[in-house]
Image 1 (cartoon, rainbow, N blue to C red):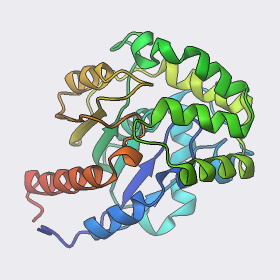
Image 2 (image 1 turned 180 degrees about the horizontal axis):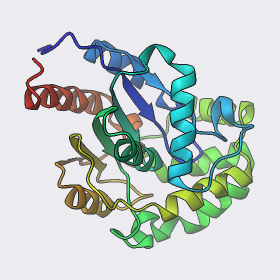
Image 3 (image 1 turned 60 degrees about the horizontal axis):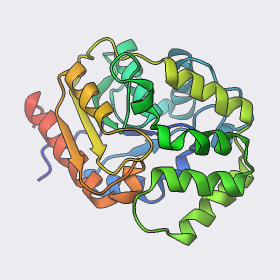
Length: 261
């Protein structure tokens, strides 16, 4: 049931070494369900911005994103937005909500984590240390194969993997930017609760980041936690329709909570 004609946009944020195209058809499906704009941005150093230099801290990366948001989508300036973000994108979204509480209407954080709440071997599971190192050093074809192994729990989709590899060739992420983003993510700490509603989502088959990180984040932020039993780290790929439905239900609950119907 559509509770409001409000057109507050939804902005999707990806994580380490990923670009907006890695959302695949998820933005279109979500937009059709929510009946509102669903938009994306690339991190500096990734996608169409692969020639730019990534910052080395989450606040500095967030400032880069905020500037890009203002430049790329001027029609939405002065309005609120909903943030849906995965992995390091969740760190950026949380920092954005704390920096600009008047701007962010709600947060959905997917398979994210925080230093100080979870040990480093949960934030990056030990079984993947060698693969992560290889993925930084490898060429685009092997890198994307390694990333698939670490982030996707469902059956291999060769056509999607080939897309990933083609994108990595078109817009390669430099080793320097990969390391700068890793360094930024490793130091992020979720120390305060934002004013807006927060929903934490986790794939219980995540092989890259322990699901315990989402438990710790939900406890720290006093936020509800929903889990998918078979999805991995790339939950939008492993459980696309489930994620669309959960976000739809969450936004309806946000509007009920604030009497926006």
